[in-house]
Length: 184
Image (cartoon, rainbow, N blue to C red; front, side, top):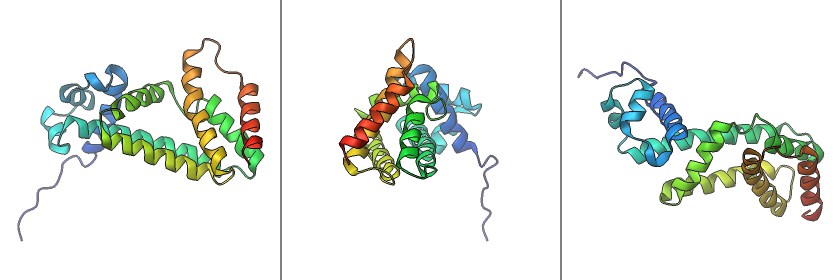
């Protein structure tokens, strides 16, 4: 039986992807480098290229982590809702609350949108993310309402991050109610 090499650090690949996320948030995807990722992960530069075939691959891994984490929060919030009214409250919380999208995650989402313009894999990842979001929303809402609500969930946090006074929770909740009523 041949000796098999065993990794000394089995979590290194995940740590590198996590570091890539931090670098993307701090410097932007277009300024992310193997060297910056290695420094952030506290690993030798060669580890980044060992675990990922290209810089785009490690950036994709960082975005995939973001999508997985946010999809879980999204699904959990809507899964906990017992009825449509509670689901409307959950959507309001996804838009207005701090638990769904942190400032760092919102920056990463901006970067992901930009990166997806030039990367078919990330564009496909984002399309899958929309599909996952619609599945979570479909527990409580019509297909047309799912599309409208998902657009609100995507767009309103952007407005929240750019406005000085934030968003008015009552306006958000009333808007969600109006969308659901108009698109049964």
